[in-house]
Length: 222
Image (cartoon, rainbow, N blue to C red; front, side, top):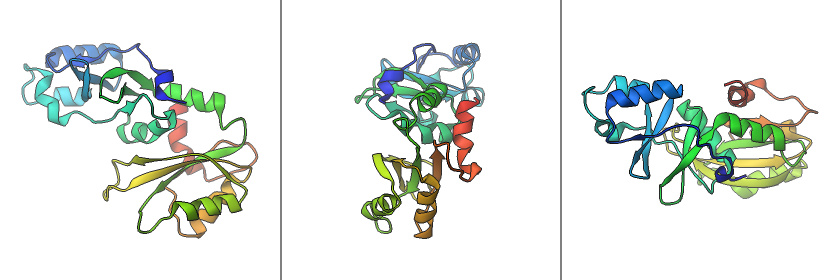
């Protein structure tokens, strides 16, 4: 499920050379929390209404905010699920998507991500996504995988992402698991001192701590 597949072209972009007042007008008309700012065709970052209102020179150009633009984006070849922590960290309802060179391609909307999860689930089987802050001197992927497999879980996808909220700059290990015993796997990992930052459960036969659903519910009810 690549981000490229779910691009939206329904929303405008701004240029570094646009005026602050033009930026405010277009943001207001778009009814979005953020818009992508481009330098030519290259993504520079995201601008918000608060940034524009609080800028030092309201009669100037957006270029003056160059170093303050929010750096949240996704590459087109990344998995759609990799967008979840960026949506959480930013509070945005859409993220700019670029190619590998940083050229802007379009937006990925959070409601599109939610729809993908609802429609596709995990190959029509029970399972979930687990986010684990990963420290190479403390954590071992092979040990985590062994605990999952010992509890009848199948790892169908895994990747590492950078967590901008982590003060230590630790990456997060994201694991997609197909299983009928998702809550048992979570309990087993935590029992072995593996810290679970977030877990999203997509089965119908088990219950799990509802606090872990906060992020998903935010996508489903924007």
